[in-house]
Length: 304
Ligand SMILES: O=C(O)CCC(=O)C(=O)O
Image (cartoon, rainbow, N blue to C red; front, side, top):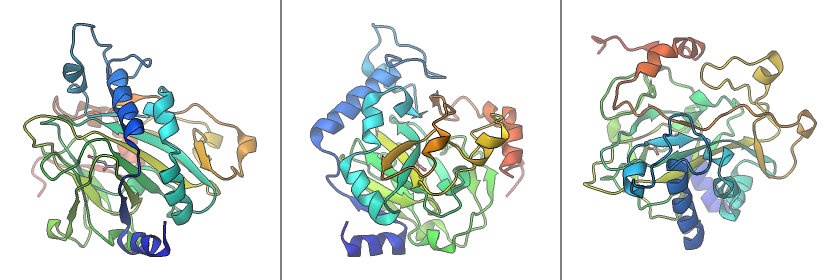
């Protein structure tokens, strides 16, 4: 990470580092993706263990995204702290860095994208250190549903209100609204397999469906922040005690010292499949309490 790369990141809110993952590691991540989807690494809420007669393709096509794969897979756990990731994050966050989340996108042909959003909306670091590392396991293209970002949109430091959208191009996650940009301000982030896209938690970004006729757009996305800051994070509609609510401690240190090591580590997040929306977004209504907590409003059918 040269000073001009850091400056580019600060200005634009993202940076692509090419060849950040070596081919062996990449092959290992792809093998592990298959094993997780087959249910071979342990139970994942929403994953049906595969029958030996089912092909890897048939099994991977079932899932859009698995949250917290590092909880079950030592390979995904090791990928949180790849040398290239540590180098970049210590340059843009600081010497002490913790990870609180991983997400494994499989996104087979035909699977939806995710609407405009800011990751800080979901993971409230509030110290503006939240950084995603989006590891491309396949070449990511406009056709197969790469990331799109609005360069510089992180600079406002504003969390734009989210509403629940029902656009069939997107999964069930909410959509940011009221921001002063249009789709024309967005740029696609097409990258080769083995590249990592680092992006700021306030950066507006989205992805479109995988429109390719076949294949996947697999990526492992990990989230990090400064270890000095507390993380008052509720996950979904789970209810936690007062101490947990003040500081989410289901973390993995990837660089430096943990100033709060004395608190220990808690098991809070469980691996689960993200609802893709293809069978409807029934979870949205079920999670009404969680939506209320996040001040998210359900979009009325006749809403413009
Ligand atoms: O990879 C995608 O399709 C969406 C990823 C994303 O928006 C995120 O990691 O916040």
